Image 1 (cartoon, rainbow, N blue to C red):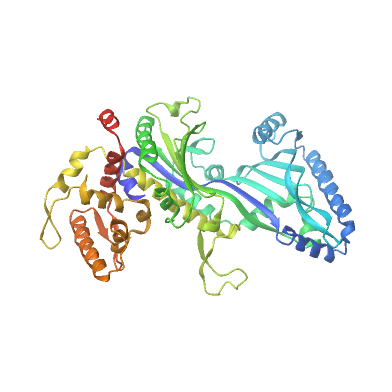
Image 2 (image 1 turned 90 degrees about the horizontal axis):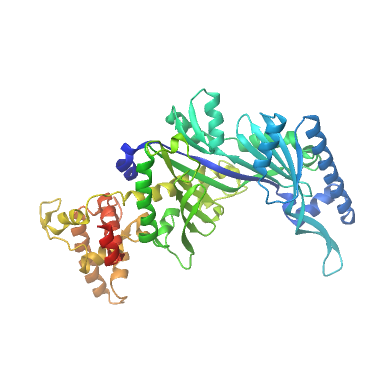
Amino acid sequence: MRNFLSRFRSLVLFILSGFDRLRLCGESRLLNHSGGVQSYLWQQNILFKDFPSHAKGLTNTLCQQTKSLARQQGVPLQYLNSPDIDKEAVARQLAQASGQRLGRIAVLSCLESCSIYKIRKNADGLIFPNKELSRCLHYYHYFQHERFGLCCVRIQSWFPFSIRIGLNGRRWLCRQLEQRGVSFRQDDNLLLDVADPVLAQTLLDDQCHTDWPSVLQELVQPIHPLWDHLYHTAQVPYYWMVEQSEWATDVMFRSRADRDLWYDRWIRHGIINLRCQDTLHFFGKTVQGNQESKISLRTRTEGRRLKFWYGANSEKMYDKGRQAVETPSSSPSGPAAVRFENTMNDPSMFKVFRTKEGEEDDAPKSWQQLRKGVADLPRRAEIGQAANNRLMESMATVAETTPLGKLLEPLCQPTRDHKGRRVRALNPSAGPDGQLLRHIAHGDFLLNGFRNRDLRLLLHKPTEDKQEQRRQSAALTRRLAILKAHGLIIKVPKTHRYQLSAAGKRLTTALAAAYEADVTRLTQAG
């Protein structure tokens, strides 16, 4: 983010990074597979043939007590005949009609798809509980929570009674600021202004280190009629996981006009200059085998969204609130935001430094696969922030208003290296020099840099002749020394790797755009 801030600091009011949407789920590890259900039935002295009636009895208890508790507390209860209805909007309407302002404001029920267990026969004619897809009633409990703001808990009414929880880190932040008496202005999940941005960022950072099992138990236990049965009688507690996390970096520009000017340039940069392979470095990955990535541009209610997909995970940016209803803050002189957002649906492609599953806390740590469990949420935040920073750094490279000719002019003149020796001029737009610059600007090298060997394999045909390999490497070493003398690359200390400097990134980005553009486009740009 350093290059981004150095270029836009005068245009930016503040930058806030933290969790946006969090979708958590609670499932019993024992009841998550058929063998575990068999163990549960054995411990409860329940025959397989009696499982349907046992499960139905638990469902009846959950449904009846959920309705009874809602009536006792005066909470509106409504059934929805379609899962596609905007449940949050319905909950807000019910809360407004009933006067519910804090606490549980509405309970909605709806038939939705889920995973349940049914008794089936195997090939030997023996019955067993089998996990299958089906539909059942789900209860949505909406809260205006004193800590989290507007949030939702969904409880499945059929065995194994899975839970889904929806929170929003920005709404959570707003509640924290209110409780501390810090003034702010918000538009849904976007802070338009805040009196103390440093405190706001500190509070967002602290959210990552929440004691999630205790917090989620405090949220769910009072509204879950089967909590005591699952935790104490059956001893099958919930394991709390993260289904989806969004880590958002909001850049609040002082002027909407400035935001729109630069965002248009960033969109063109993302569509014209970035390739699918180049986007892998946003996720900390290099090209290995057949990995699918894609780029998409869409205009949505939130704004124009440029999205980079890598598997089930994504990195995106959008001009937040571009098409929202006109407000005083949406005037050309008012503030406006660009949001950079990392969405993680599949954590398995990332690593976390921890002890192995099942080992003691004081056991040696190593790099292990990132888990869905809430224990790894701080690592999700680190990965999300790193991805946002890389996207912002890429966009900072197009923030050069100097004509391309002015950028190239110093390179077309001889210079001196750190020892005072004369170094020849470059021809960065064509020939061997231009080809070398295009290769080192590839996304494969933006993350971890590049070595002499990496470039040799790209620029020369494969050969087993050791003497020819040494000759090629020596020639490349001399060419890299020229780039270093011109300030386009820097040596990574204590390694054999090089990386593009900030000036090198700006220049190679401009050259890539000019190299790919046709004459008509260049004429229009001029």
